[in-house]
Image (cartoon, rainbow, N blue to C red; front, side):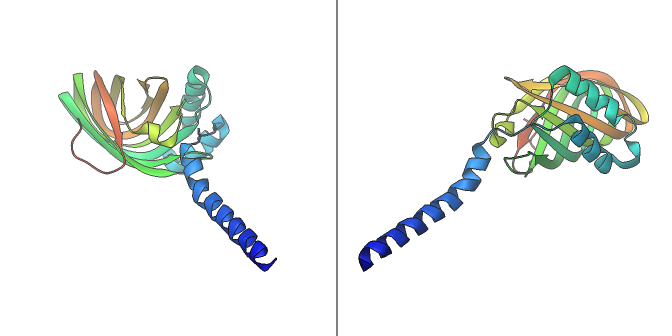
Length: 192
């Protein structure tokens, strides 16, 4: 009788340990749940501070076009261009149920584009099937027209996943370009 209860105790402990080990793995592989426009605007106002007057209208327009995102990224970036350009950034991707993670992005661009800027960036992520699905290239067309500061958004896609960067930047930039952002889990100077 005693060995039976010991066996049951070991079985229960093994089951509990397996559940604890599997829980984070399940969260990482789970499809992130969606965020409401109100949550995005509130977090954006905290992040952008006084430059965020137009944030609510930009978030509303993005959710009107693509629905509710299931992840968002808050970070900062720097870019520069004269016909060809480069962009580098870093931030944290937030999901409701799959955990948060630090990530980096970089990418080249080519087009009728000139100037430099630094920006606080909020990226809305739509249709993300899992947390690790962000680690790839997202391409699109970007346009900028501001002197001293500006606020705008664009859309980048890869398969069914859409990333919508919303930038509040300082600098001088004018132009239209074609390019991509590559997301990585470690910092790199290689934009390709």
